[in-house]
Length: 560
Ligand SMILES: *[C@@H]1O[C@H](CO)[C@@H](O)[C@H](O)[C@H]1NC(C)=O
Ligand SMILES: *[C@@H]1O[C@H](CO)[C@@H](O)[C@H](O)[C@H]1NC(C)=O
Ligand SMILES: *[C@@H]1O[C@H](CO)[C@@H](O)[C@H](O)[C@H]1NC(C)=O
Image (cartoon, rainbow, N blue to C red; front, side, top):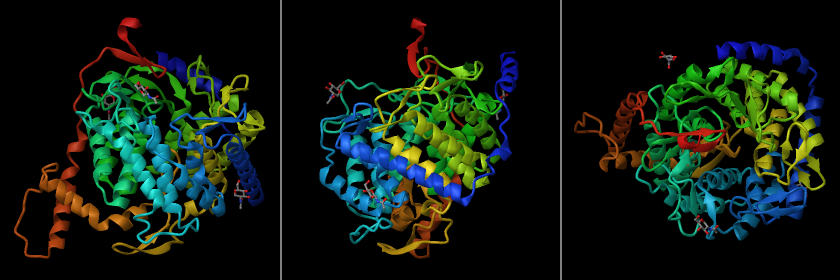
């Protein structure tokens, strides 16, 4: 009944978007928007350098800086690869050496394991892999060694103590100097467990130390085991008991990048296990949470709707769908989300779908990238001019609403366009990068394989930079060819070691080999891959716990 009412409401509230309306984009318009986006970037970036560096973030209304995620000069790390994407090699080189001289991870800071991974480790890894493109001097052994790679590794090592739990699923916070605080809560959000495989497997394959990929994979497999018998996962989990503390299932805050990393991990690592996990979730998500190309929040065991809300963070979903080839569904959902942008000139953090309006206390738009990210992927796939139209609307809105003398300010409330004294580092890392890439079809990151570099790696010559870049959830691109270049021999050795140490079942028939040792290696790996396909298709259900989360906050049932 409720659904019937909602469905009628949609058609009244949202006009059909006119597909033809974006046809006017010429080469000249594209170039015009590239220049506009560049000048937005430099306004934000120079304001940060002049007023806030070495703090993490700029405060654009007071023209000063503040530390937000851990005293890493975070905005500089996050913006580094965007400089290169906008064509600024000299500034990339300057910043890369400034970071090497000034960043110290040996500090008494309580850092978010998730944020440090995606912004700091991801940013440094991406900059490392792009440093040839940026004209940096390279040390012998690059891309399998280098100063930025060593910094990324150092930062990631500080996060490893978080994974020392009975399940291997990580705590949410670590102290960079002391490890996990004794009073740390064992409750972590789903994305905080499942958003490591891109950075950690890149680190392992580039450096040769398997520990990172191993902990990330263990966390993913433990999380997979906890899905409900209708195939959904909740929002917060106790990493000691594997019990779900917040049982809302959806695709937004607290979960989002877990699904993203299953798809992108499958692509980066050519990994069937991750791919089939995602496809199983996708079936359940479509079956239980999707209504008229919107996605709701539902109870993870029963599938009943708990929040008919669209969250700004969910706008990455159409982009993810385009990566698995689901363009039709992606475009329909994108157009729903675009109507919300048009209604407010930004996306409120939460939007009530039945009411067609913002949700109390979640009216802000912190200049998030997700809708633009989806537009970029979809434009690559469809060339539909509606997607450029969204890009144009974003440039015009942000310039009009949030540009101030010292940068760009978070929108506190999309209804009256009041501002907050914050400019998040993702504005430079993601929002402006995806916007630029939307309007720059010839960018090197869109390379279709027709250009590439050749370098001599430790196992022979390597092709690099041939395209197929995979963006981490902070929009830091990773080159799959670099992983391959450094790891050909290594990954084979690890798989054998896993089998020998009993962490992985050996293949059934171990016939005596008459061939070369190398041939035998290949045979074991092939047999093992075949075996892996089946067990991922079933997931045991979890006991019920009496807590629920509303609008991202966790309550126990006594209080409600
Ligand atoms: C690169 O960035 C620096 C710092 O903002 C700026 O001074 C310089 O003009 C930029 N160069 C290019 C080619 O855009
Ligand atoms: C880190 O968190 C612990 C536990 O909450 C607290 O005792 C400590 O003072 C915090 N350290 C810093 C530098 O904030
Ligand atoms: C879809 O949901 C129905 C119950 O609403 C269930 O019977 C069916 O098995 C589900 N299908 C899938 C593929 O999850």
